[in-house]
Length: 186
Image 1 (tube, rainbow, N blue to C red):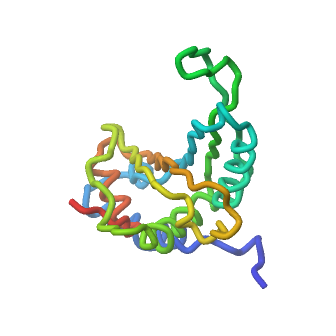
Image 2: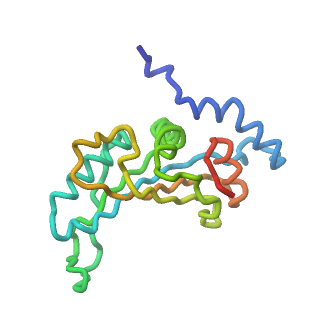
């Protein structure tokens, strides 16, 4: 049985023991606080079909909660858009922000289990950084996660995964994610 007080996620321990030293040497940081680290991971599902059927939001919320291991929040429309039949405060999606141990556990499952299960997977784009050290990617089917029972889902949704780091540049962030074995194509 795991003791919650002494348990450390595998990637968090690897970061502390090996990755920090490698990054410090690669970029020549003078201070340990300059070494980039993961800040948070934000998962988002936009459910456009929720305009017609409000039950789909609850289903998506349950799926994202299972994937993240933390309760997902329903996001609502800020403005009314008549062309899309959207009214203000209408639920349109779900999101969850992961920090700490849950963040490292999710990243581990994403890299080792979920991404290899994607059909025709050849790696993730290495150019999807925002210029400030944050990485964004999309997953077309949320069913690649082992927490989702394929037989019990009613619809397959895509999701966005945004990995926020404390890195100042994209090169530092890419080096950090490469240390975590993120499968970049370029």
